[in-house]
Image 1 (cartoon, helix red, strand yellow):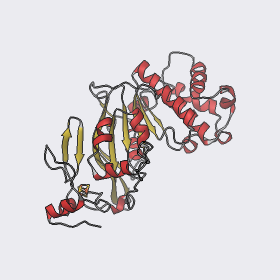
Image 2 (cartoon, protein in one colour):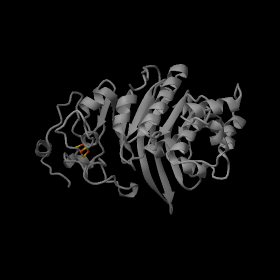
Image 3 (cartoon, protein in one colour):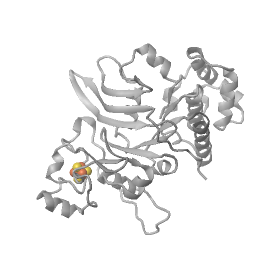
Image 4 (cartoon, helix red, strand yellow):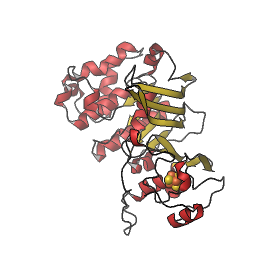
Length: 350
Ligand code: SF4
């Protein structure tokens, strides 16, 4: 049985508002994400989903300002964490937040770890920079056991190249949890792990949530993981959030054609007749985003109005979508592509 994560409805721990991010080269800024807005409440698991290249990882790196500095990454918007704006606080203040209050599990553990230092030095390093009440060695050893290492001492003596990808991922998870953060940005945290270790890791996160109210942003393209563990979900496409909803509502009643495509692409064991359908095409690169709705080159419902950026419509409490098929507060069910095209006198863009 999946671990019981509690849900929460209190004031947000993190409120991201209109986060836009771009990269500057040759005097020109290429926008990568635009107007990203979402919130994470205390003690909840919030899913951030979408195909590779949709902007999920870069959004979280942007929140912690872990992107290339001067002359390259350009950030705007607001990210309020416990009343402090992460995007505008001083470097020194941000350093005290990183690792201690907000931690991140990086997608590429082998790239995130220092190849020249043994694991012990790397796991003890955060304690040198942040106050901690307790014995760091005890904490490190306990967490290594919790992420599935029967012999923590052997791991502590090792260098990163001596561990497998799955072992490094578990070390990185332990590293992120060392200082009891309030918020964990978990970027594909269990991708390299087998299912039993995956369950163990998720049980550990659930336990930390129950004990200390840990909130998790679960960045993944695995909707099954979101279905099991998250309470709310936001879908990103080509640098924008296109739908946000409570997870149960999203699974039963996804509205955005991209969200529906993601769900249609899932294999289903409960429906023998279901044939997974891939979404045609791929996410455009940031310098080739189409104008208006960025999904329009792949959307079977695209019509004339889709050349304009769609605004948000609230479908039901907590469920919002940015798509021209839902321009009214009480939208009708999603029409078939031909109906949508007829209604606008348009034709699909494909
Ligand atoms: Fe975008 Fe238009 Fe398709 Fe909606 S119908 S997803 S606005 S292209």
